[in-house]
Image 1 (cartoon, rainbow, N blue to C red):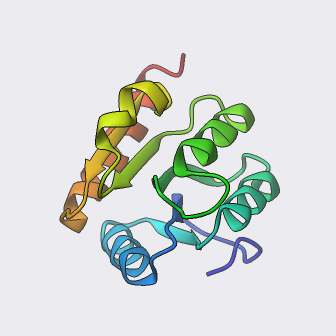
Image 2: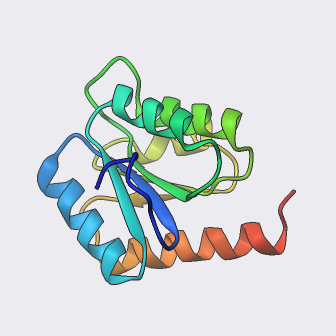
Image 3: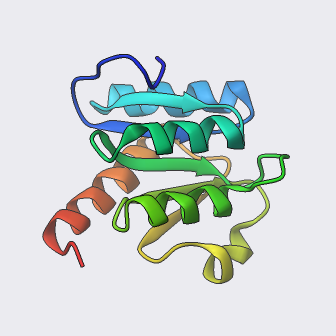
Length: 135
């Protein structure tokens, strides 16, 4: 699904350069009732965020290491510049120890490997906590 199609339901932006992992995340979130927009590169993610206009993304799930100039840390910081309370879930195979220094506040880190249900719970938890306390 592209960022330009009309979407119905809570929409999550998924950023991962590994297509198999991206598909696992997408399927898990869709099974959890979310609509998913995917980005395979840092540029695609920034374009999707900036084109969104704040109207439909309810959360972001991003890999930390995108093997590009920008990392998942950078994607999340840009998202928070545009939408200060958007929930962020980071997934990583090797950067979990950097989360406290680089992660945005009120985010969740999920180490790889993970079960898709973990992502659904993490996204839902952050969305609910943001709705309860939007500060």
